[in-house]
Amino acid sequence: MTELIRTLANGIWTPVLFLLIFGGLFFFFYSRFIPYKYFRHAINILRGKYDNPNDPGYINAYQALSTALASTVGMGNIAGVAYAISIGGPGALFWMWVTAFVGMSSNFFTSSLAVMYRGKDSEGNLQGGPMYVIREALGRKWYWMAVVFSVCCLIGCLPIFQANQLTQAIRDIGFPGVDWGTLNLAGTVFQYLIWWWA
Image 1 (cartoon, rainbow, N blue to C red):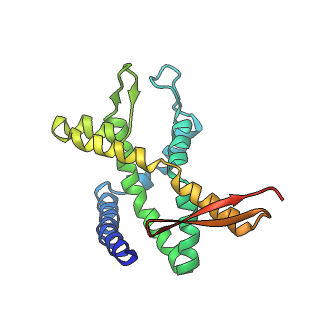
Image 2 (image 1 turned 120 degrees about the horizontal axis):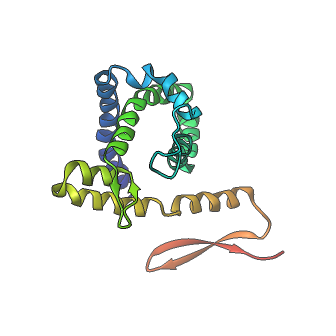
Image 3 (image 1 turned 60 degrees about the vertical axis):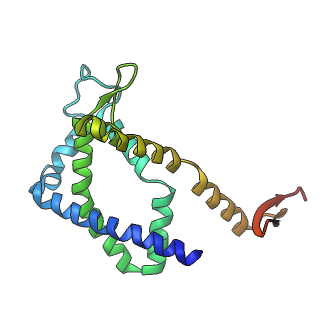
């Protein structure tokens, strides 16, 4: 079963990896290096140089960037980077920098699309995100893809990964009174955490 999951994961991940890298390179040259040429302008926007209190919306540019970073950098990014460096060493760090440099181009275009194709919710407030880009830019024919993306986001935000990391931390640190029990149901062995007060 483990080998099947590994083969399936490699079969899914490999095309996506090449799509991300070559897509980023395409946008890198297609945009004529816009994300890099206007870096100083981006810093000025974040500093509030172009802020207008009468602009529509609820947050300013700095708050929008902070929100985008908060939703991008999570436990997976931190644990994944540490794991990649522990396995690949300095070479993994170098390739992470290269892909980040190329990934800035694709991120620039996805952020631009999110601003260009914002939608309105049921209360008439402006909302953004990939599901709105799909709905507003591609039309009703591709509405099903926006629904699928939204459902995947609902599943992806479940705290399963964080719960596993917390349990592993408790297990590795070895607090007194923490042990593992096993439960065998129909041939499947489950582990569960036993906590008692010493």
